Length: 327
View (cartoon, rainbow, N blue to C red):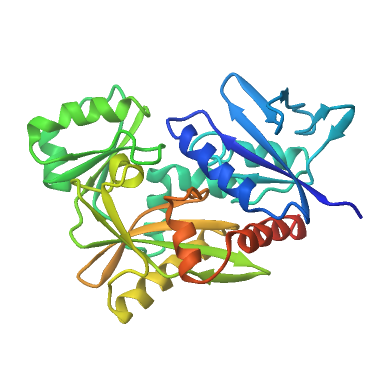
């Protein structure tokens, strides 16, 4: 038996493609080259291509997600999905890979699509008794009734693109006059918008993964933003403190971990996810779940793995082998 061939899919079509490339590079650097044959694949709007160490770029054969290089045909045994946003986080890549019978490391297409659509995910989880903020949904072109919105969600509130990540297009609205500009910013990212009441409490993020059928929960990370909220600057430009483990009571820690595990089970997730909550008066309120969480040096999951004394090399090997074994 030769080495298993791993293609690391990175990039994507959204504003997050640069962050995804960083995540993919971390996976490439950390994975055991003695155990696997590893290739970088950039999935970009105008081109899908393998990127080789000599700088050569070779287009992906979409029939088998492979390519030809130096007279050899490379067809991956498994795809490590590090794409944030579309097409990696919204289920499109998972659906395509399922059709051509190649396993991949993150959620299946339905779970990815559902969780990527914040509105639909909230609607499903509320039915199972998961606590969520008050919210209103608006589609581009809808008549905006500012009074009705504010009566429902109150002020301050958050305006978010429904299907975007890394806090692109999110605004914190403190007055009715701020609403039109916030909607304008959100519509740059998506035609569907979610408006939510502001929760006041401790923001935490919980990594969850499955290994050999057992769900494992990492220690929560507390997020303390210098800005109004955990926006792009806070996430990626050092304008926040991320404290692992979070400075919360043992009771709150156990409660939020229990809810994170429950959500992972309810949505039938696989691979690693990161679920964000705000703990308000001891109650964790669900914000969102990420099925391809950031893996770059600044990202939360690597920090939680470090806290758990799990090396990235070991963790990534585990995700790859689980994907292959569960095919």
